[in-house]
Amino acid sequence: MKGFLSQRGIPFTEIDVSRDAAAAQDLARRTGRLAVPVTDIDGNLVVGFDPEQLEHYLAQARNAAAPPFGASVADARKITASRGLPAVSGAYIGAVKPGLPAAAAGLKPGDIITRIDTATVSSAADLDQALSGLEKGARIRITFVRDGSPRQAEGML
Image (cartoon, rainbow, N blue to C red; front, side):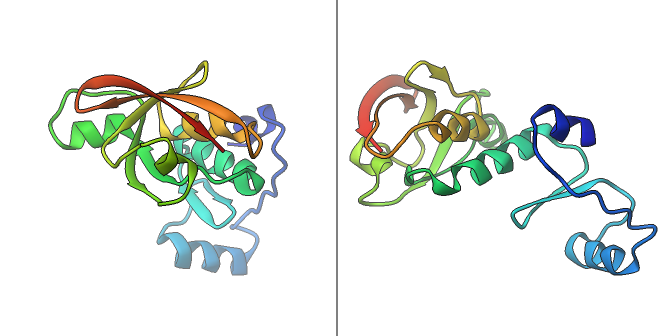
């Protein structure tokens, strides 16, 4: 975990729960577990070493000041697999907020975003990362799949 965060230049505080009883109690209360790596990123807990989940929450933390996209997303592979469908990579849209860029671009729940401009989107974390460097007012081209057909839309953040 330390190597993962250090490689990305992310500052962190390490707490040894074997030496800090209050931290151990807080960890047990929040996760129901003890003695596994637990990472708290702005209140989002990652239990164990899950690089995909870590990247997702780190991207969210970086995006805190970025313009909102207006869509709730999850990893498309997990959603399609859970429904017995062929696995598809991308960011699966679960909900779209009216009046925000995702809705203005015509995205709908069930769409799977596969690219933002030239950046490939294989997961929700990839979408977060693709949007993180963009500023309010930026025009973007969104490539997505709807009902099995590839489509494109343009939007503005």
